[in-house]
Length: 245
Image 1 (spheres, rainbow, N blue to C red):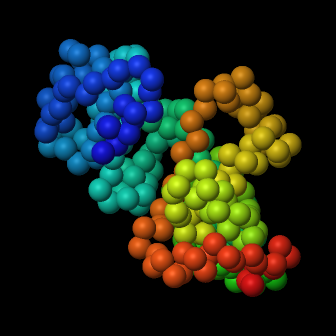
Image 2 (image 1 turned 90 degrees about the vertical axis):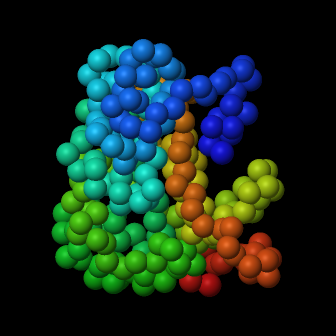
C-alpha cells in the first residue's frame, strides 16, 4: 500500500520493479540498478536493512533508504542504539517529541538527566491529560538512554489543541486520529513560530533547507475508536488552562 501512495504523491510516473527476499540479493540489486529509493525490512537473511543502508552510505550512492520494522518503534530503537545524528541513517533526521503540558515526562527526564529518577508530580504537575496514550508520569530509563544522542528537542501541547488538530485533520484530509495521536502536529506548527526552534535550525544549517523538509508524524490510533466516541471527541473543548476537563 505504501508504494501506491508514494506513486500517487508524485505528478510524474514512477515504478517499483525490483524486489529481493534476502539481504545479500537486495544489496546486489541496489548496486546494479541504482534505484532512487529503496525500502528495507530490518529482518532479512544474511544482511539486515540497516546494514544495507549503511553500505549505501559508505558507497556514496545517491539512493534514499527507508526502514520498515514489524516490531514498531522499539524494534527500530534496539537496532539504532549505536547510531548518531552524524552517521548513516540518522544523518538527516531530526527527531522531536511532543507531550501534554501536564505530563511531559520525557522532557523532564531528559532535561534534568535524571531519566526515570524523576516524575512530573515531583515538580507539581498533575499528570492529568486527555491524551491517554501519553499520560505517563515517569519516563522510561531505557528510552531516555537510547534517545540521548538522537533526540533533537521537545514540544509541549495543551489538551485543547489536541482536539483542534483532530478537527482540522478530519476537515481538511478526511482522516480521523484520536486526540493523543494529534500531539505530533505541534512540531511542524511550532517550527514556524518558536524562536528556540529557529535558533536550532540556524545552528544545524537547516534554515535554507526547510522548503524541502519532510515532516513525518507518528500518527497512531483512531481506526478502532467507536463512532459514538468519535462524535463525542468532535464536540470536546477542554479548558485551555487545565490538563483535564
